[in-house]
Length: 287
Image (cartoon, rainbow, N blue to C red; front, side):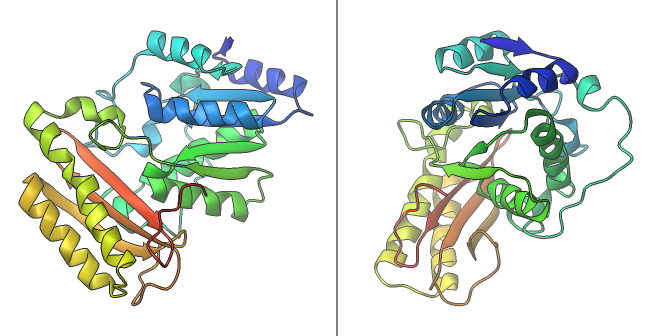
């Protein structure tokens, strides 16, 4: 496996494989099974697999955890090699942003809801860094986990709006044994919080079952999921939302593909989770 840190060397390397299928897994590192599952799928479907590690300062707000975001490069290099990554791109901030950006990218749709509501500017930073990475790497396919479903929806519209010749693929959320969605921020949970955090998944299951049983009113489902989270987690609820997907617009009746999404704030960890469902309540496992 090659580890490349220079933007110029990365572009030169990708020129050599221009005629091959390139699967790209963009990450911020601190790999867990969610990341490696994306690498595994990319390996099955492409000639070359590229993974990037870059903790992007543009997508962190002033009071967020950029400096404290967990990092373990040695571990990540080992994991990437174990899972068949051909090229690991690990640029530093100076390489990615050698000077202040003079062309500013701004998301106008799918952002002022869910996580975007409490993180203004976050998705502007996401689309900026991804645009740079797409231009540097020029992948055929790009892989994201469905846990970050809003990010996936924003990337989908970015690729369509700017005509990137890239297929965006969403893969199922990878979970721990207790069904908590894998996240680098799970390390911040106390033992008591970890025990309560399983109720994010349980609350979503209750909401899904309502749809399966024929409930079509989003308000009824949202209220039930919110009640479960409030009673069982003791965490501050950021949101419980039911929207169409991927457009992320409110619905008055469930008759299309939807996302049921939750976010809660524990003491040092903000957790998100979601189910993407068809109109009958079946979980969608690939986008």
